Image (cartoon, rainbow, N blue to C red):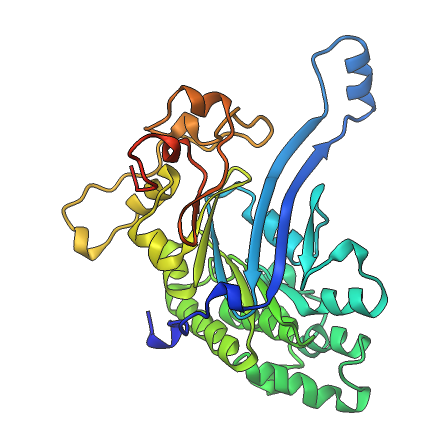
Length: 353
């Protein structure tokens, strides 16, 4: 990775403002029965409403100026959590605090400010951009509506946002389909920056791009972080990207946070068996003779998650307690939390198994 990707040394978390606090947040999606389903259920058919437990009692704090990497397999709930943090989805349970205030209690200017200051950049730039609008409208519509720029200054304001995202302002009259994938992602970044946010949720924002373009976009993210003092929740399945980009890493599995620690700690001393399995599947130059294996088994369905520890059907260290009791997310070392019953065993000492 380029040197420009290296994040500046993080400030001690306790000395920084808490920008986002996620407190006991859950999100469920219910698939309601249609008329035929309800009729069949009344007649005794074994049919019921299906409920997807996408996020399950998550606690998370993100400090100003921090880059938090959120990692997990597809279907673990990380995108749903990102949308709730960005204010796009409401939680089913729990609360999300923006700078110490519960979002649901904000009204008027405070609610508007919280909405604008937390923006999201999506994985697929083509599907997140309106194909019927020109780039100038895509980028400038929201700031014009919210009074961040005047109609007389609209063109100059859009030009500034495009240049900041690495785009040529002369292309502002073009439509999204006339750009490459990397350019469309830059349009999405410019659109997010146009409302002057303080916090960005990046949901797999480079996953659909070629490797060379990925590096350019990641360098852009870090450049913007330095220039604008941005805070990021960076959602990715690419551990290499997360390692270079993040100050702290949060690992999710089937809706729950299973491990949280500074980036160096996660990659050097992972505690949870799931995190160890993820890292064990990443090829590294220093381990050329090692046989790499993926995490065994399939992730269970969120429609019917396992009892106890959600990871126990795939865990090589599972024992009876794991199958019936949900482990707590406990601090196993300063700044290092893990959700695993192995940490309660004698002589384990919070060390990797």
